[in-house]
Length: 566
Picture (cartoon, rainbow, N blue to C red):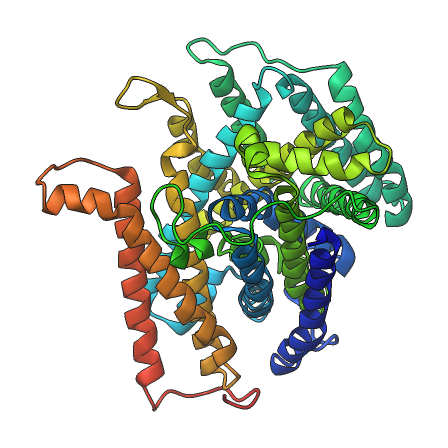
């Protein structure tokens, strides 16, 4: 099968979904361009900043994408085959992920830019709010720890690490300069974009000429030293005004992501037309992966970002909603951003499809498969495959890196909401509190049963997929209640919520099943952080489902009429 045909099918289906279902969502939610948003109502040029929809779309896409829509689809394709993976990416993005992201933004802007946890408090009990808030904050702590260690591991990789580290630092410096030029010198967005984008590629080239290696902190190895440096960066970035770093970095990162996908698609197009690129990977591999876990439901948690991701609600209601200039922009930024990420996932999947089984076994890791695929696509444009391979690895590292400061800022917001402490010192204290656990976690060595050192990010990585989708399920459930109480169509959120709850809960059980067997059958008591985390997620799920179901059953609550009840 020609690879181009599959890509064109994806473009057609995602475009149709945006026009038809995205249009229906806008109508059902009664979005109006003349309704003041929190970005205008509470404008302070730090957190609340009215932003043009396409500038915000780039920033939002950069924050939600990272490595998720790259790693997940490739892993799922390796385990189960490209056909079930492709179907889930398209259907999940249109009917679940896009709904989740767009509703998260709309609910937040209609609650004065508050986080999704505050929206849940408005519909459920205070107890549910506190539990959910704690879970969100701890989830961000784990995300920061994992992404920091992944990035640090990339920076200490013997061949390309120092160059990637240098390019990333130059990239951040460029974002700072762009933010100052836009804000202080009133440089137009168009001109600053035309200047900055070529400089992004200059940063990549300069990084190879000026590799960066940090001197070791006493008592820490190279990866741990980079972990500390990255956490210091996260602290500084989280308390900076958004216009100074987060907005320009996200804007440039979004362009970098789109350029990577765009030139890959162009190379794929030329390669397919010249019959050099055909699908080599099998459409279906099997019903179980290498660990013995079944396709149903593991497929739905393996491909998270790219189809549906609970982490997106934190971006949508944490930073994006505070910058949305018009209500109608929610369709472009929320729904459109999700479908663009689905297309990124399809492109990532296509890097696997051009490989034979033996080639996949040789490359092994998703980042290597992605880089090899992008290099193959770009080689059809006359670009050196070696240069393209380095470019793709640098792009991959940049996507991961872009998530760190956003997650830290969101952790700061949630900590301030949780404590109710908001003054001049609270941003610094909340940021420090959010980063102290990752610092402790990432400056320790973890040893397996054979005495081998385990990278810190692997400790909790196995449960991320399931917990991420469970978070999406709970958010969709809370949003369906929010719609229900306002007399609006709620089944567009409730039905996806039920589906995601089932697949995430079953997946969590399958993940901790061996641990539970050891405890209750073999009587072997051991502390498993993954198992404990899963049990906490189960408890949270039960609490919120009970609280929400009670509200659905009640018939005498008052409904604020804004639309027709479904």
